[in-house]
Length: 379
Image (tube, rainbow, N blue to C red; front, top):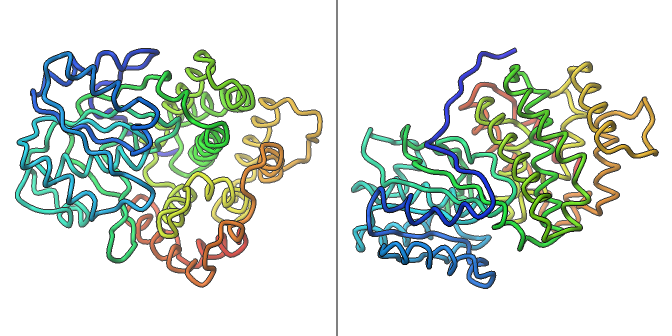
């Protein structure tokens, strides 16, 4: 097992209606706030709700909500200009993985005289960063409990894991009530991604007893409640269980570093501008069948955990982890092949190269050929 390095970026506040604390938390760091959010939260009312809470605390709030599926470093530069011109004192990220990564980048770049290239090329320069508060509204964010984020560079469509200086994130508020507006299909995809990345953390070489503890809790909660969570959108008890699983999964991932499957899914989704969670559900069965994960004991343990949690009569003792996952994908009608997502197979090798570059900067080194073989099989 790997050595343990356990750190949390700032404090974590978890619970229903805890978003009501955001005004008091933000006021500790300044009175001029830049609230960065996914565009969808304008229609759900979540953005106005959070803005109202902040303004009732007499904070001056500017909103940047022009974040969509194609947003990348060009959009970040626009938000940085807004932060600098308004003399922003604290940045709040509200939304999914894309919005929170976006907010992290803005908080870093806006505090200095450089530009987004400094952040993208990992040039930290030991400078100050604007205080950052994160409010996730999606069930999953593998980077939530780290001072890192996943960004896509606009010009080359390449991706990277970018790092914030230690202590950049001041607060993380996880409020399950903010996830109830997620459509059932997206909820299933998000839960599946949390499950898959938790399995990879449990099986991987960087696993430890603490990683296993967190990953196992996430796996048990999702397999025991996945269908019910998606079918009962307004059940806050079920949403709380989903968010507990997501936080435990993020905690496990904070101790493993970038994992091959997760990075391959994220680089492929970002390059082709398709949902990353959809890519995850497609490629992971092929990943667990590949030589990258050949620990038979761990694979069998993971398969047993899934079968025990799901309690489906159709499983047999000999079913492998990948076959159990394919059964789940079929039952919940999740994406099966990359080819169904209308992407160009000729460009899959580019995604493999990007994933190799990210992984080579972490704790392991995997050749692009191995990544390409997984994508080719999944296509």
